[in-house]
Structures are given as structure tokens and as C-alpha cells.
Amino acid sequence: MKNPETLPFFFIIGRPRSGTYLLRNMFDAHPNVIIPTEGPVIANLYPKYGKKSFWTEKDITRFLADVIRHKDVQKWPLNKAGLEKSLLQCTGKCTFQTLIKKVYLHFNSAFAKEDILLLGDKNPVYSTNTNKILKAFPDARFIHLTRDYRDNLVSIRKVDFEAPYTPLIAYRWKHSAKLLLSLKEKQPGQFYTLRYEDLVREPENSLQEVCQFLQIPFKDSMLTFYEKQPAAFAKHPDKEVKKYHQSLTSPVNTKKIGVWKNSLPEKDIKTADAVVGKFAELSDYERKYRQTGFKTKIASLPGIVYGKASYLFADFLDILPFRLRLRIKEAGSVMAILYNKLAGKT
Image 1 (cartoon, rainbow, N blue to C red):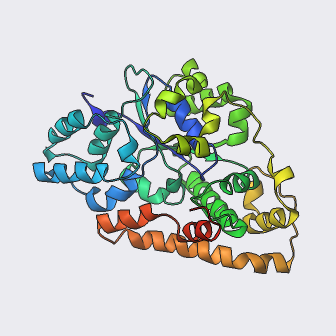
Image 2 (spheres, one colour):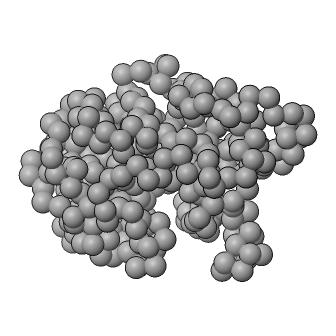
């Protein structure tokens, strides 16, 4: 807590339902790491505060209010009184990075902590705007977690925050993979790619390699993270835990590898293969269909167009006032909301 500005920072990124929450919980169980639950405060606050170098008491009070305004952050077990006192010590010259680090240091994990060596952030949404995150934390390291796009499709269909439209989900997987492969080529020292399949097959070896990349010691407690999950989920509604995180209360297993082979119709497999294309092999996955036909490609166009438009819209949001921008983002996907209403899920 004495010198938060010197603490290194890392991000766990990847498509939703790719194991990012699993990896985050493993790091939460590390005694020398603090990594809050999901809450994209950095991306949301950077347009407003990112370039600020001098802070008045009023600025800091507004900053804290904007942090807590996030719905996800309201579920964090934060020491708010201690955080406010700590942030007010930053009046005068200070960086956005330092204030964010102080916020994260006040996240009260369910796991015992010792000397903090590393701070982390897990948000799947950052896998499509990593360039923005690099502006806020140019020295950060990134763990890119990837999962077979067809298993990812099966998993996303079970939740309600993305519409279960195969071309759209496949395009978003491809978009994320393309962006992160490009960044890894440009800045290889800052990016480490880990396949979900390797993580659950060989968790200890995978975690040892990731810890080496992050320059921290591996701890056995990372493998037994599930023992304290009831306490870790204390502020999350039981319905939410059962829907999204039930598997995290048990030891790591390989049950969810290759489920697409028995769950997806051939039409969806062919569509996903067509949309993802060569980025399947570039991400170490093998397509079932390399030749998918003209009709499949044409039928996929609406999902691809919608996906591209949604990313353009996300870029546009950055120029809007913070509160309006946050309200729009937290409202959720328009297509997902429409689908769930039509399907009677809401």
C-alpha cells in the first residue's frame, strides 16, 4: 500500500465463456495478487480521467463516485472508507494509473493476502478494445485466454448477455482473435496466449508458465481456489452464480472440452467454420469444414455486419459524457435483449 504506483499490472482478456473467470479466480487465490471481479472501470473512466495529471479534492471525490457508479463495482467487497481516505492522499500531482491501483488494492478478497506483488483485471470486453487499455496501462502484461470457437458458441447460447446467433458469435470470436494476434506480433513481450483446453487439462503446468510470464511465484493455493468460492460469491445473487459460475465451485475438469461435437447442428458448425476461417488454425483449432459454400457465406453476412456495426458504435460511445456512456453500456446488447424478450426469457 505504500507505493502502489510501482506495482505491475496485468489483464486477463478473451471472449466471454472462454475460461477467463476461471483463470481470474485462480489468481484471486494467489496470496500475492489482487484481482477484482469483473467491472470495466478502466475502459469506462479513461476517456474522462486518463490524461489528468493534477487532482483537486473535488476531482478525486468525483472520480470515486464514478467508480462506485458501476453496477459491477457495487458488488465488489470494497473498503470504501479506507479507499476514500487513500485516494484523497493523491491530491496534487498524480496519475490515473495510481488512482486505479489504489481502488483495486481496496478490493477485499475472500482469500488471505500477504505482500502484494501484482494487480490484475479480468474483463472479456477488453479483448476487443485492448488498444485503449494499452493507452491507460502501456506497460501492462496480458494473458489472452482462448477457447475453441464452437465450444464457446455452445456456452454463450446458455447465457443471456449475447444473442445466440451463430454468425454474430463466430464473428466476435474472429474479431477478438485477429486483434490479439496482431498485437502479440507487435508487442510479443506483453502478451501470453493460453488455451482453455490446456488450462483445464494441465492446470498446474499452465499456471506455472503464466506465473513465470508475470514474474511472480506459483502458489499451490491457485489450484484449490474452488474451496472458498461460496465466500467469494457472497455479494452475488444465487441465481446469477448458478447460471454463470456453478462450475467454479468444483475442481478443474475437462468435461466442457469438445461439447460442440454432440451439441451443435452441422449447419451451425459449417457457419462458424465459414465465419472464423483461417483464424481457427492460427489459434490452434482445426476447422471441420474448410469449404463451406456460397450460401453459407451469404447467410452469415447479417451477423457479420451487425458485429462490425456494434464495434463501431462502441468506439462512438467514447465521445459521449461518462454517465450517458455508462448507462448505454450497462443496458446490454440490443440484439440480446430483443431475442430474450421474443423468447420469453425476460
